[in-house]
Length: 242
Image 1 (tube, rainbow, N blue to C red):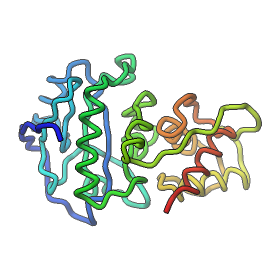
Image 2 (tube, rainbow, N blue to C red):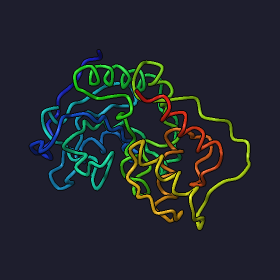
Image 3 (cartoon, helix red, strand yellow):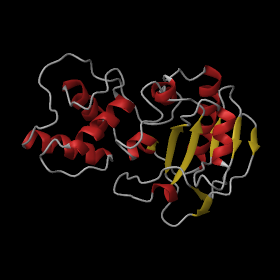
């Protein structure tokens, strides 16, 4: 495990429900890592995280794991709406989509992997609950983005992953579609954990959830359209659950 520095953020509170069973990964979305860290420690920001990982692999802890950091915002996973109370949040320094989505440096990902391995060993966090911010807040958040190396973490035993099904065209469900096929898609997404109702209508919420799923699990094409590749990848993940 790499050394961890300490820099306290005042933006935290008491955990209020359930076990700490979610590991949530973000990108900072700011061009400068030190400015991002300062913002997370600023009382005026109202945001924080438990750990911050610099591009060079340095790790800073801002909030004790026993405390509720303020990182998830309005969010939902597997029926739980107070994601902050059940999660550990990690901010990974990266300017994100607004900054051109640069790749995550190898040293940063190796440090993050070591940190995640420690955390999932310390808390009852199952692989399917190692999540992106975009998973729990579809449409509102995009981080850590489609360039984040989820497969690398999974190879180290962190998170749930399967090889995405090939993109090969064919029939697809998209905005405006209705009926039983849309209901089945929504039911599968909800079964996996996404916050979505089973309405039978491919509405804006369904499009946002599908895009969030693609961003994490089928990142080669993120368009919010449930093609055969998207649906088959979702089925593979569900079939692989314990």
